[in-house]
Image (cartoon, rainbow, N blue to C red; front, side, top):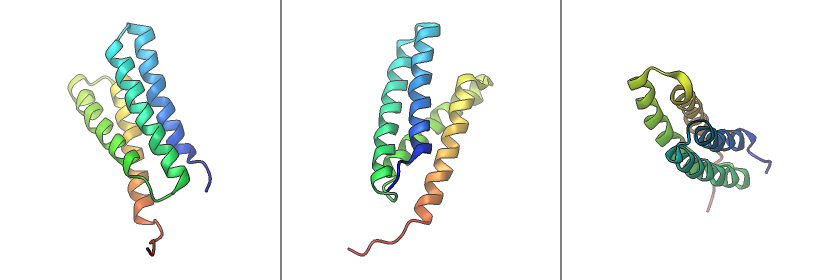
Length: 108
């Protein structure tokens, strides 16, 4: 199995966004949330790299971030950072759903 580079890039962008929010605005909440969700997305990327049908953690993280940041974008109408994270998360949800739909069936 190869590395799931799309999920790795998503996890890295979430973590980098949290670090950027801390460095620019001094927001420890942004740092904590970015590292927490980025770390969980990183674990999900690892799990999907080992087993291409193990997408549930990635799906949960991207659904959570998509909902939260989508609400923030709707409330503030500011694309950065809420709209960007919501857009990336919706893309990850769609990718996970597509991969789950087309995953090979395991005979246990």
